[in-house]
Length: 455
Image 1 (spheres, one colour):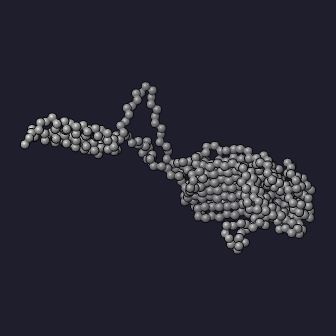
Image 2 (image 1 turned 90 degrees about the horizontal axis):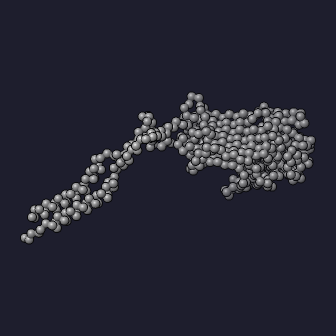
Image 3 (image 1 turned 90 degrees about the vertical axis):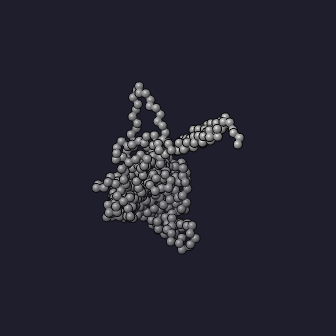
């Protein structure tokens, strides 16, 4: 009987050991049962490998219809560096500045925040007083990621404020559009696009008595005709900035292109007075910076229009590259100096930069009044463009998305659920517990029913 009892104990222990080792052996020898999808195209990369965003891509385009500076170069520039010599070297600012019509488009694939990879902004006016720039509750802005399939379009009428004495705008409209794809990155069209347009504008509507240029400036509220203002834009004007990818002949990778475009038909000076001048813009200025990834093929293009200056229908002169300056007397109160803006460009590595200005207008003193030579300075058509591309251009070759599963035909019986892959012994935790418990219980029963023999 002792042999029988030993046999029962051994059998129970053997069954328990078998129950512990069996599932582990099965897990090691059985292959996974979950099917692994294979691509339809053998050359297609695995679906589990993410498509990297091509880059780096960096680009900026900015367009400003005009900016007015009152007493330029008279206010010291503040600095956080407490060094009198350093502050003395900084260029001085204007007493007041007002910009009209701003459009900015930006792209940066290296931006830390995803929503800063593509940005488009448009605003009607910006003001600075003694170098301080207050925030105005006007303007439009859009950023991506996430991708924006549609632009934002809206009127941009600024609220009434004391700044109306410096700049008055009407008929405003703008739109902004920023795009960036999660997989393709900048391989969208466009990356950023900003537009701002105005129906008319008047600037420098009120000045102190000593600066009113012999009474030519009214010094009161602006009017629809521009009478009493230094300058008046009677027709529609538009600023537009765009960043996009373009094809390059003989190159697989795309080039990064930043474009600043300006539509400005004419400008009137001292409208409605005997000294009224008219500046007609013949052509539309357009500044384009194209980065191919190779400094030798990256380019800057600028379409510089001609400017015709007339008074009472009689032409006074033409401003162009051959004749960049023109001085026009205004009674005995001062002189108007008109100058063609200068194009500046630079190439740094695979990045190309450029800046241009349509023309400058300076009001110079005609007699000693104890003020700086330039009383007012107005700049029209300030444009910048910057573009940078990786070597070889931007690779927009994106693997196609895997095809959608085919629809199940009507009347087809549903397939049985597939067994999950046996990837861990955790699948056997509960069956193993109860199997071992049952075998131990069985061994205890066998030992209990067998009679014991005394020695």
